Image (cartoon, rainbow over all chains, first blue to last red; front, top):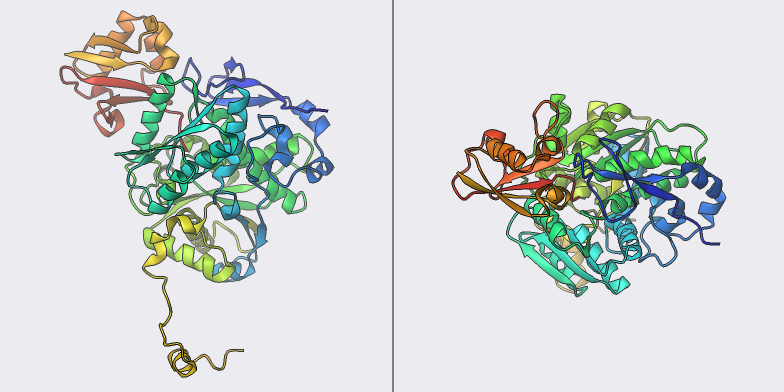
Length: 416
Length: 91
Protein backbone atom coordinates (compact mmCIF):
# COMPACT_ATOMS: atom_id res chain seq x y z
CA UNK A 1 0.00 0.00 0.00
CA UNK A 2 1.28 3.44 -0.86
CA UNK A 3 2.04 5.46 2.24
CA UNK A 4 2.31 9.13 2.93
CA UNK A 5 3.51 11.72 2.58
CA UNK A 6 1.89 12.78 5.81
CA UNK A 7 1.87 16.44 4.89
CA UNK A 8 -1.01 18.60 6.02
CA UNK A 9 0.17 21.88 4.53
CA UNK A 10 2.60 24.71 5.13
CA UNK A 11 2.68 27.16 8.02
CA UNK A 12 4.52 30.44 8.56
CA UNK A 13 7.17 30.03 11.22
CA UNK A 14 6.75 33.68 12.25
CA UNK A 15 3.01 34.42 12.27
CA UNK A 16 1.47 30.95 12.03
CA UNK A 17 -0.65 31.56 8.92
CA UNK A 18 -1.44 28.36 7.04
CA UNK A 19 -0.94 27.62 3.34
CA UNK A 20 -1.53 24.66 1.03
CA UNK A 21 1.42 22.34 0.28
CA UNK A 22 2.35 24.05 -2.98
CA UNK A 23 5.46 25.78 -4.33
CA UNK A 24 5.41 28.51 -1.69
CA UNK A 25 8.25 29.37 0.63
CA UNK A 26 7.42 32.79 2.04
CA UNK A 27 4.42 33.96 4.04
CA UNK A 28 2.45 36.43 1.97
CA UNK A 29 1.67 38.38 5.07
CA UNK A 30 4.95 38.82 6.95
CA UNK A 31 7.54 37.24 4.60
CA UNK A 32 8.43 34.64 7.25
CA UNK A 33 9.58 31.19 6.11
CA UNK A 34 6.97 28.51 5.52
CA UNK A 35 7.47 25.17 7.24
CA UNK A 36 5.96 21.82 6.35
CA UNK A 37 3.21 20.69 8.75
CA UNK A 38 2.92 16.94 9.32
CA UNK A 39 0.35 14.66 10.86
CA UNK A 40 2.68 13.25 13.51
CA UNK A 41 0.08 10.91 14.95
CA UNK A 42 -0.34 9.23 11.60
CA UNK A 43 3.43 9.08 11.15
CA UNK A 44 3.85 7.55 14.60
CA UNK A 45 1.32 4.88 13.65
CA UNK A 46 3.20 4.16 10.42
CA UNK A 47 6.87 4.36 11.31
CA UNK A 48 8.92 2.10 13.56
CA UNK A 49 12.55 1.17 14.02
CA UNK A 50 11.76 -2.01 12.10
CA UNK A 51 10.08 -0.21 9.21
CA UNK A 52 13.04 2.13 8.91
CA UNK A 53 15.55 -0.72 9.05
CA UNK A 54 13.62 -2.52 6.31
CA UNK A 55 13.65 0.55 4.07
CA UNK A 56 16.10 1.54 1.33
CA UNK A 57 19.69 2.36 2.27
CA UNK A 58 19.12 6.01 1.43
CA UNK A 59 17.38 9.02 2.96
CA UNK A 60 14.13 7.51 1.68
CA UNK A 61 14.12 4.99 4.56
CA UNK A 62 12.74 8.04 6.42
CA UNK A 63 10.12 8.87 3.80
CA UNK A 64 7.36 9.06 6.42
CA UNK A 65 9.10 12.13 7.86
CA UNK A 66 9.79 13.75 4.47
CA UNK A 67 7.43 15.95 2.46
CA UNK A 68 7.39 13.90 -0.74
CA UNK A 69 6.46 10.39 -1.76
CA UNK A 70 9.24 7.81 -2.05
CA UNK A 71 7.51 6.29 -5.06
CA UNK A 72 9.26 7.74 -8.05
CA UNK A 73 11.73 9.71 -5.94
CA UNK A 74 14.49 11.56 -7.78
CA UNK A 75 17.16 9.38 -6.25
CA UNK A 76 20.88 8.92 -6.81
CA UNK A 77 21.27 7.11 -3.48
CA UNK A 78 21.85 10.02 -1.12
CA UNK A 79 22.08 9.30 2.57
CA UNK A 80 22.83 6.51 5.03
CA UNK A 81 26.44 7.62 4.93
CA UNK A 82 28.94 6.17 7.43
CA UNK A 83 29.01 7.29 11.05
CA UNK A 84 32.59 6.59 12.07
CA UNK A 85 34.06 6.48 15.53
CA UNK A 86 37.09 8.80 15.45
CA UNK A 87 39.46 7.73 18.19
CA UNK A 88 42.63 9.03 16.57
CA UNK A 89 41.20 12.50 15.95
CA UNK A 90 39.57 12.36 19.37
CA UNK A 91 42.95 11.68 21.00
CA UNK A 92 44.42 14.75 19.26
CA UNK A 93 41.57 16.93 20.52
CA UNK A 94 41.19 15.40 23.99
CA UNK A 95 37.77 13.90 23.24
CA UNK A 96 37.05 10.34 24.29
CA UNK A 97 33.83 9.64 22.37
CA UNK A 98 34.07 11.46 19.04
CA UNK A 99 32.20 10.40 15.90
CA UNK A 100 32.17 11.69 12.34
CA UNK A 101 29.15 11.70 10.04
CA UNK A 102 30.92 11.28 6.72
CA UNK A 103 28.66 12.97 4.19
CA UNK A 104 31.55 13.40 1.75
CA UNK A 105 30.54 10.05 0.23
CA UNK A 106 27.14 11.13 -1.04
CA UNK A 107 26.54 10.76 -4.81
CA UNK A 108 27.87 14.22 -5.70
CA UNK A 109 30.13 14.50 -2.69
CA UNK A 110 28.13 16.58 -0.25
CA UNK A 111 25.11 16.61 2.06
CA UNK A 112 23.27 18.65 -0.58
CA UNK A 113 22.20 15.42 -2.24
CA UNK A 114 19.86 14.89 0.70
CA UNK A 115 18.01 18.15 0.27
CA UNK A 116 18.02 18.07 -3.52
CA UNK A 117 16.60 14.56 -3.70
CA UNK A 118 13.69 15.74 -1.54
CA UNK A 119 13.28 19.06 -3.36
CA UNK A 120 13.20 17.64 -6.87
CA UNK A 121 10.98 14.74 -5.87
CA UNK A 122 8.49 17.27 -4.52
CA UNK A 123 9.04 19.58 -7.51
CA UNK A 124 8.17 16.77 -9.89
CA UNK A 125 5.05 15.96 -7.87
CA UNK A 126 4.05 19.61 -8.25
CA UNK A 127 4.52 19.37 -12.02
CA UNK A 128 7.78 21.29 -12.45
CA UNK A 129 10.01 20.38 -15.39
CA UNK A 130 12.88 22.78 -14.74
CA UNK A 131 15.16 22.61 -11.69
CA UNK A 132 17.06 25.74 -10.67
CA UNK A 133 19.10 27.09 -7.78
CA UNK A 134 21.52 29.67 -6.45
CA UNK A 135 24.60 27.85 -5.25
CA UNK A 136 28.01 28.14 -3.64
CA UNK A 137 28.97 24.97 -5.53
CA UNK A 138 27.86 21.86 -3.70
CA UNK A 139 24.24 22.54 -4.44
CA UNK A 140 25.13 23.27 -8.07
CA UNK A 141 26.68 19.81 -8.43
CA UNK A 142 23.72 18.16 -6.82
CA UNK A 143 20.94 19.98 -8.67
CA UNK A 144 22.62 19.44 -12.05
CA UNK A 145 23.13 15.74 -11.33
CA UNK A 146 19.68 15.02 -9.92
CA UNK A 147 18.03 16.98 -12.73
CA UNK A 148 19.97 14.91 -15.26
CA UNK A 149 18.86 11.74 -13.50
CA UNK A 150 15.24 12.91 -13.51
CA UNK A 151 15.29 14.10 -17.13
CA UNK A 152 14.58 17.66 -15.99
CA UNK A 153 16.24 20.74 -17.42
CA UNK A 154 18.42 22.63 -14.98
CA UNK A 155 19.45 26.25 -14.56
CA UNK A 156 22.16 26.66 -11.95
CA UNK A 157 23.45 30.08 -10.88
CA UNK A 158 26.86 30.37 -9.20
CA UNK A 159 29.24 33.18 -8.27
CA UNK A 160 31.72 33.54 -11.15
CA UNK A 161 34.72 33.13 -8.81
CA UNK A 162 33.74 29.65 -7.65
CA UNK A 163 36.41 26.94 -7.31
CA UNK A 164 37.16 25.43 -10.72
CA UNK A 165 36.39 21.81 -9.71
CA UNK A 166 32.87 22.78 -8.66
CA UNK A 167 32.30 24.47 -12.01
CA UNK A 168 33.46 21.40 -13.94
CA UNK A 169 31.53 18.95 -11.77
CA UNK A 170 28.36 20.93 -12.40
CA UNK A 171 28.77 21.63 -16.11
CA UNK A 172 29.47 17.99 -16.90
CA UNK A 173 25.82 17.13 -16.24
CA UNK A 174 24.77 19.20 -19.23
CA UNK A 175 22.39 21.76 -17.74
CA UNK A 176 22.54 25.52 -18.07
CA UNK A 177 25.25 26.91 -15.78
CA UNK A 178 25.12 30.67 -15.22
CA UNK A 179 28.23 32.29 -13.74
CA UNK A 180 27.14 35.55 -12.10
CA UNK A 181 29.60 38.38 -11.53
CA UNK A 182 28.81 38.79 -7.85
CA UNK A 183 29.03 37.04 -4.50
CA UNK A 184 26.63 34.35 -3.33
CA UNK A 185 24.25 36.80 -1.67
CA UNK A 186 23.95 38.66 -4.95
CA UNK A 187 23.33 35.41 -6.85
CA UNK A 188 20.75 34.51 -4.24
CA UNK A 189 18.98 37.81 -4.61
CA UNK A 190 18.95 37.38 -8.39
CA UNK A 191 17.37 33.95 -7.98
CA UNK A 192 14.79 35.29 -5.51
CA UNK A 193 13.78 37.77 -8.24
CA UNK A 194 13.97 35.15 -11.00
CA UNK A 195 11.63 32.92 -9.01
CA UNK A 196 9.01 35.67 -9.34
CA UNK A 197 9.56 35.97 -13.08
CA UNK A 198 9.79 32.24 -13.89
CA UNK A 199 7.09 30.61 -11.76
CA UNK A 200 7.33 27.37 -13.77
CA UNK A 201 10.88 26.75 -12.55
CA UNK A 202 11.53 24.95 -9.29
CA UNK A 203 14.30 26.89 -7.54
CA UNK A 204 15.20 24.32 -4.93
CA UNK A 205 16.34 26.92 -2.39
CA UNK A 206 13.72 29.53 -3.23
CA UNK A 207 10.17 28.52 -4.15
CA UNK A 208 10.48 24.86 -3.05
CA UNK A 209 12.81 25.64 -0.16
CA UNK A 210 10.25 24.57 2.45
CA UNK A 211 10.48 20.99 1.14
CA UNK A 212 14.16 21.11 0.27
CA UNK A 213 15.26 22.11 3.76
CA UNK A 214 13.48 19.13 5.30
CA UNK A 215 16.03 16.82 3.68
CA UNK A 216 18.65 17.88 6.22
CA UNK A 217 16.65 16.25 9.01
CA UNK A 218 17.86 12.90 7.69
CA UNK A 219 21.33 13.72 9.08
CA UNK A 220 19.86 13.62 12.59
CA UNK A 221 17.70 10.57 11.87
CA UNK A 222 20.65 8.55 10.61
CA UNK A 223 23.01 9.57 13.40
CA UNK A 224 20.54 8.45 16.07
CA UNK A 225 19.78 5.22 14.20
CA UNK A 226 23.49 4.49 13.75
CA UNK A 227 24.08 5.06 17.46
CA UNK A 228 21.51 2.38 18.27
CA UNK A 229 18.50 4.72 18.44
CA UNK A 230 20.22 7.06 20.86
CA UNK A 231 21.15 10.68 20.34
CA UNK A 232 24.65 12.05 20.90
CA UNK A 233 25.34 14.56 23.67
CA UNK A 234 26.65 17.21 21.32
CA UNK A 235 26.77 17.83 17.57
CA UNK A 236 28.95 20.29 15.65
CA UNK A 237 27.38 21.52 12.42
CA UNK A 238 28.73 24.00 9.85
CA UNK A 239 26.62 27.12 9.33
CA UNK A 240 26.07 28.76 5.94
CA UNK A 241 22.38 29.70 5.74
CA UNK A 242 21.77 28.01 9.10
CA UNK A 243 19.17 25.70 7.59
CA UNK A 244 21.10 22.47 8.10
CA UNK A 245 21.73 23.14 11.79
CA UNK A 246 18.11 24.12 12.37
CA UNK A 247 16.83 20.98 10.65
CA UNK A 248 19.24 18.68 12.49
CA UNK A 249 17.76 19.99 15.74
CA UNK A 250 14.25 19.48 14.39
CA UNK A 251 15.11 15.97 13.25
CA UNK A 252 16.08 14.80 16.73
CA UNK A 253 12.86 16.26 18.17
CA UNK A 254 10.71 14.61 15.51
CA UNK A 255 12.23 11.19 16.17
CA UNK A 256 11.01 11.37 19.75
CA UNK A 257 7.63 12.72 18.65
CA UNK A 258 6.97 9.72 16.40
CA UNK A 259 8.29 7.14 18.85
CA UNK A 260 11.70 6.33 17.36
CA UNK A 261 13.49 7.51 20.52
CA UNK A 262 12.64 6.39 24.05
CA UNK A 263 13.63 9.61 25.76
CA UNK A 264 13.14 13.23 24.86
CA UNK A 265 16.46 14.21 23.26
CA UNK A 266 18.69 16.84 24.83
CA UNK A 267 21.39 17.37 22.24
CA UNK A 268 23.74 20.31 22.56
CA UNK A 269 24.17 21.92 19.16
CA UNK A 270 27.18 23.99 18.19
CA UNK A 271 27.76 25.84 14.95
CA UNK A 272 30.91 26.31 12.88
CA UNK A 273 31.74 29.28 10.67
CA UNK A 274 34.79 30.67 8.91
CA UNK A 275 36.06 34.04 10.09
CA UNK A 276 35.77 35.30 6.52
CA UNK A 277 32.00 34.96 6.86
CA UNK A 278 30.86 34.65 10.44
CA UNK A 279 27.69 36.69 10.95
CA UNK A 280 26.11 34.02 13.17
CA UNK A 281 29.25 33.60 15.31
CA UNK A 282 29.40 37.39 15.68
CA UNK A 283 25.77 37.52 16.84
CA UNK A 284 26.43 34.66 19.27
CA UNK A 285 29.43 36.49 20.73
CA UNK A 286 27.66 39.81 21.05
CA UNK A 287 24.47 38.39 22.53
CA UNK A 288 22.38 39.77 19.67
CA UNK A 289 19.22 37.93 18.59
CA UNK A 290 19.43 39.19 15.01
CA UNK A 291 22.04 38.70 12.32
CA UNK A 292 23.95 41.62 10.86
CA UNK A 293 24.87 40.69 7.27
CA UNK A 294 28.52 40.70 6.21
CA UNK A 295 30.46 40.61 2.95
CA UNK A 296 32.12 37.19 2.74
CA UNK A 297 35.80 36.56 2.10
CA UNK A 298 38.20 33.64 2.55
CA UNK A 299 38.56 30.10 1.30
CA UNK A 300 35.40 28.52 2.72
CA UNK A 301 33.26 29.41 -0.27
CA UNK A 302 30.66 26.73 0.35
CA UNK A 303 29.78 28.51 3.62
CA UNK A 304 30.06 32.05 2.24
CA UNK A 305 26.56 33.32 2.88
CA UNK A 306 26.77 36.82 4.33
CA UNK A 307 23.03 37.14 4.86
CA UNK A 308 21.94 33.74 6.20
CA UNK A 309 18.20 33.14 5.85
CA UNK A 310 18.00 30.85 8.87
CA UNK A 311 20.78 32.49 10.86
CA UNK A 312 18.52 33.71 13.66
CA UNK A 313 16.85 30.32 13.98
CA UNK A 314 20.23 28.56 14.09
CA UNK A 315 21.36 30.98 16.78
CA UNK A 316 18.23 30.20 18.74
CA UNK A 317 18.77 26.41 18.54
CA UNK A 318 22.37 26.79 19.65
CA UNK A 319 21.52 28.99 22.63
CA UNK A 320 18.55 26.89 23.72
CA UNK A 321 20.62 23.71 23.65
CA UNK A 322 23.62 25.12 25.51
CA UNK A 323 25.98 25.00 22.53
CA UNK A 324 28.14 27.70 21.00
CA UNK A 325 29.03 29.19 17.62
CA UNK A 326 32.69 29.79 16.85
CA UNK A 327 34.72 30.80 13.81
CA UNK A 328 38.16 29.85 12.50
CA UNK A 329 40.71 31.49 10.21
CA UNK A 330 41.66 30.26 6.75
CA UNK A 331 44.88 28.79 8.17
CA UNK A 332 42.91 26.94 10.83
CA UNK A 333 40.57 25.63 8.12
CA UNK A 334 43.51 24.17 6.19
CA UNK A 335 44.91 22.72 9.42
CA UNK A 336 41.50 21.17 10.11
CA UNK A 337 41.33 19.56 6.66
CA UNK A 338 44.81 18.11 7.08
CA UNK A 339 44.25 16.96 10.66
CA UNK A 340 41.08 15.12 9.67
CA UNK A 341 42.78 13.53 6.68
CA UNK A 342 45.89 12.56 8.64
CA UNK A 343 44.07 11.05 11.61
CA UNK A 344 40.95 9.53 10.12
CA UNK A 345 41.45 9.11 6.38
CA UNK A 346 38.68 11.47 5.36
CA UNK A 347 39.39 14.23 2.86
CA UNK A 348 36.92 17.05 3.42
CA UNK A 349 36.36 20.28 1.56
CA UNK A 350 36.86 23.62 3.28
CA UNK A 351 33.55 23.37 5.17
CA UNK A 352 34.87 20.20 6.81
CA UNK A 353 38.01 22.07 7.77
CA UNK A 354 35.79 24.71 9.35
CA UNK A 355 33.92 22.08 11.33
CA UNK A 356 37.08 20.34 12.56
CA UNK A 357 38.76 23.67 13.31
CA UNK A 358 35.81 24.83 15.38
CA UNK A 359 35.52 21.44 17.08
CA UNK A 360 39.18 21.78 18.11
CA UNK A 361 38.56 25.28 19.37
CA UNK A 362 35.46 24.35 21.36
CA UNK A 363 37.22 21.30 22.81
CA UNK A 364 40.15 23.47 23.89
CA UNK A 365 37.87 26.03 25.51
CA UNK A 366 35.83 23.36 27.31
CA UNK A 367 32.54 24.04 25.52
CA UNK A 368 32.78 20.54 24.06
CA UNK A 369 33.50 18.36 27.09
CA UNK A 370 36.11 15.57 27.04
CA UNK A 371 33.65 12.77 27.80
CA UNK A 372 30.69 13.92 25.77
CA UNK A 373 29.56 11.77 22.88
CA UNK A 374 30.18 14.23 20.05
CA UNK A 375 29.25 13.95 16.38
CA UNK A 376 30.88 16.30 13.86
CA UNK A 377 29.21 16.65 10.47
CA UNK A 378 31.67 16.43 7.58
CA UNK A 379 29.49 17.67 4.77
CA UNK A 380 31.59 17.92 1.59
CA UNK A 381 34.37 16.14 -0.29
CA UNK A 382 37.91 17.54 -0.43
CA UNK A 383 38.26 16.91 -4.16
CA UNK A 384 35.96 19.88 -4.67
CA UNK A 385 38.38 22.34 -3.07
CA UNK A 386 41.80 20.96 -3.97
CA UNK A 387 43.33 24.42 -4.15
CA UNK A 388 42.85 24.90 -0.42
CA UNK A 389 45.55 22.36 0.36
CA UNK A 390 47.36 22.02 -2.98
CA UNK A 391 50.26 24.23 -1.93
CA UNK A 392 51.05 22.06 1.07
CA UNK A 393 50.28 18.65 -0.37
CA UNK A 394 52.68 17.18 -2.92
CA UNK A 395 55.23 14.39 -3.19
CA UNK A 396 57.40 13.92 -0.10
CA UNK A 397 60.40 13.37 -2.37
CA UNK A 398 61.02 12.72 -6.06
CA UNK A 399 63.43 9.91 -6.84
CA UNK A 400 64.90 7.99 -9.74
CA UNK A 401 63.37 4.51 -10.25
CA UNK A 402 66.21 2.89 -8.30
CA UNK A 403 66.20 1.08 -4.96
CA UNK A 404 69.27 2.93 -3.64
CA UNK A 405 67.81 6.29 -4.56
CA UNK A 406 64.57 5.50 -2.76
CA UNK A 407 66.34 4.33 0.38
CA UNK A 408 68.75 7.24 0.41
CA UNK A 409 65.97 9.76 -0.03
CA UNK A 410 63.54 8.37 2.51
CA UNK A 411 65.53 6.55 5.14
CA UNK A 412 62.49 4.42 5.95
CA UNK A 413 64.18 1.04 5.82
CA UNK A 414 63.25 0.33 9.42
CA UNK A 415 59.48 0.86 8.99
CA UNK A 416 57.61 -2.28 9.94
CA UNK B 1 12.98 62.25 -6.52
CA UNK B 2 11.23 59.81 -8.79
CA UNK B 3 11.93 56.25 -7.68
CA UNK B 4 11.00 52.92 -9.17
CA UNK B 5 10.05 50.30 -6.54
CA UNK B 6 10.22 46.67 -7.61
CA UNK B 7 7.59 44.50 -5.96
CA UNK B 8 7.96 40.75 -5.26
CA UNK B 9 5.25 38.29 -6.31
CA UNK B 10 3.90 38.03 -2.77
CA UNK B 11 2.87 41.71 -2.72
CA UNK B 12 1.88 42.35 -6.32
CA UNK B 13 -1.83 41.93 -5.62
CA UNK B 14 -1.62 45.11 -3.53
CA UNK B 15 -0.47 47.04 -6.58
CA UNK B 16 -3.04 45.60 -8.95
CA UNK B 17 -0.59 42.93 -10.09
CA UNK B 18 2.18 45.35 -11.07
CA UNK B 19 5.81 44.27 -10.61
CA UNK B 20 7.04 47.89 -10.52
CA UNK B 21 5.57 51.08 -9.12
CA UNK B 22 6.82 54.65 -9.67
CA UNK B 23 6.77 56.82 -6.54
CA UNK B 24 8.34 60.03 -5.15
CA UNK B 25 10.66 60.17 -2.16
CA UNK B 26 14.03 61.48 -0.94
CA UNK B 27 14.98 58.38 1.04
CA UNK B 28 14.25 54.66 0.82
CA UNK B 29 11.90 55.02 3.80
CA UNK B 30 10.04 57.89 2.11
CA UNK B 31 9.71 55.89 -1.09
CA UNK B 32 8.20 52.93 0.76
CA UNK B 33 5.80 55.26 2.62
CA UNK B 34 4.78 56.77 -0.71
CA UNK B 35 4.18 53.25 -1.99
CA UNK B 36 1.82 52.63 0.93
CA UNK B 37 0.04 55.94 0.25
CA UNK B 38 -0.46 55.03 -3.40
CA UNK B 39 -1.43 51.43 -2.68
CA UNK B 40 -2.71 51.11 0.88
CA UNK B 41 -1.66 47.87 2.58
CA UNK B 42 2.04 47.90 1.76
CA UNK B 43 2.94 49.55 5.05
CA UNK B 44 1.64 46.84 7.35
CA UNK B 45 3.19 44.15 5.19
CA UNK B 46 6.66 45.70 5.09
CA UNK B 47 6.88 47.20 8.58
CA UNK B 48 6.27 45.80 12.05
CA UNK B 49 4.37 47.58 14.84
CA UNK B 50 7.43 49.65 15.79
CA UNK B 51 7.89 50.90 12.26
CA UNK B 52 10.96 48.79 11.54
CA UNK B 53 11.27 46.71 8.42
CA UNK B 54 10.04 43.19 9.12
CA UNK B 55 12.77 40.68 9.86
CA UNK B 56 12.33 38.75 6.61
CA UNK B 57 12.05 41.72 4.26
CA UNK B 58 15.20 42.79 2.45
CA UNK B 59 15.38 46.11 0.64
CA UNK B 60 17.96 47.05 -1.95
CA UNK B 61 18.86 50.47 -3.34
CA UNK B 62 20.15 49.64 -6.78
CA UNK B 63 22.40 46.63 -6.23
CA UNK B 64 23.11 47.32 -2.55
CA UNK B 65 21.38 45.94 0.55
CA UNK B 66 20.30 49.04 2.50
CA UNK B 67 21.72 47.48 5.68
CA UNK B 68 25.15 48.17 4.13
CA UNK B 69 24.04 51.77 3.45
CA UNK B 70 22.03 53.97 5.81
CA UNK B 71 18.99 51.72 6.21
CA UNK B 72 15.64 53.38 5.60
CA UNK B 73 17.42 56.75 5.73
CA UNK B 74 19.46 55.92 2.62
CA UNK B 75 19.05 58.81 0.14
CA UNK B 76 17.68 57.86 -3.27
CA UNK B 77 18.95 59.67 -6.36
CA UNK B 78 16.45 60.57 -9.08
CA UNK B 79 15.63 57.52 -11.19
CA UNK B 80 16.85 55.08 -8.55
CA UNK B 81 15.48 51.55 -8.34
CA UNK B 82 14.47 50.26 -4.91
CA UNK B 83 13.79 46.51 -4.73
CA UNK B 84 11.80 44.67 -2.07
CA UNK B 85 12.97 41.05 -1.91
CA UNK B 86 11.94 38.26 0.46
CA UNK B 87 14.87 37.40 2.71
CA UNK B 88 14.09 33.71 2.97
CA UNK B 89 16.09 32.10 0.20
CA UNK B 90 19.30 30.28 -0.35
CA UNK B 91 21.54 27.96 1.56
